[in-house]
Each structure stands twice: as structure tokens, then as C-alpha cells.
Image (cartoon, rainbow, N blue to C red; front, side, top):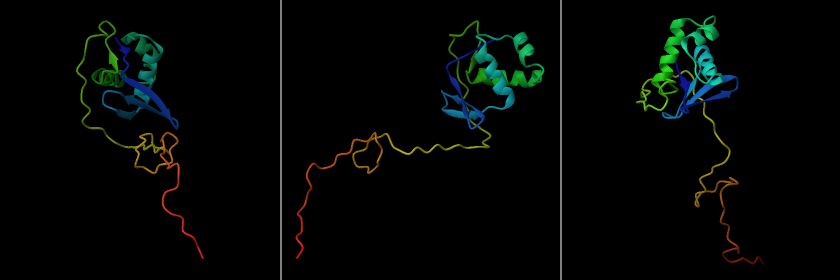
Length: 139
């Protein structure tokens, strides 16, 4: 049936199974069906319909499994094991039923802009070696 491609990576965040789809830079939360299908293909080099029925048939309906596999094929997450190198047109993700958005804010910038006052350790600060200006004498 198929095998996984390098176009997706599973990431677990706070107990949520997420899938990073590289070509579209999309991050999807996996439902139980897609999580189980992805994990099955991750454990086994190539999976056919019989192996999928044996492994997941008790937990999920054939229709749900088929829909999930078709979605993975459309996004080029799965490929036909018989023709893994055949280039595929990746379906553009146009509508995503957004229910959750996760924003990861880091504590430091890595751009190293010379005009920025960021205290990031990656930024090379350019402090003057000598103080500039004149010292004022008080009374």
C-alpha cells in the first residue's frame, strides 16, 4: 500500500500529537485515527490493507481509515511503496478547520540586528570600548 515520506514529522506537545507538514509549513493536531495510522506506518516500513485491518480494524472503521490514508496520500505524507520516487503534485491546503492555535514565543532573538537592543546571547553587541562624551564636574 504505502510508506511514509520525509514530508511530515510527528511532534508531541503537552500530550497532544501534532504533525508538522513540511511542504505547506502546516501544523496539524492528529485525531485518534490519523495518529494511529501515522504511528503504524512509522513502525512498519510498508503497510498493506490487510496489515492495516489487522492492526487498526478493531479501533477504527474501514471508512475512517480509508479517508485518513487518502488525506495522507494527497498531502504526500504517504506514497505508494511500489513507486516511492514518482514525483507527486502536493494538494494545496486551502481550508483548515482551526480549533487551536499555538504560539511559541521565545525569549531571545537570533537575528543579530545591529540596531536592536535585544539581550539575546546570540546577538553580538557592539559596545564602545571607551566612553563617549565629556564628563561633567560638579561643584
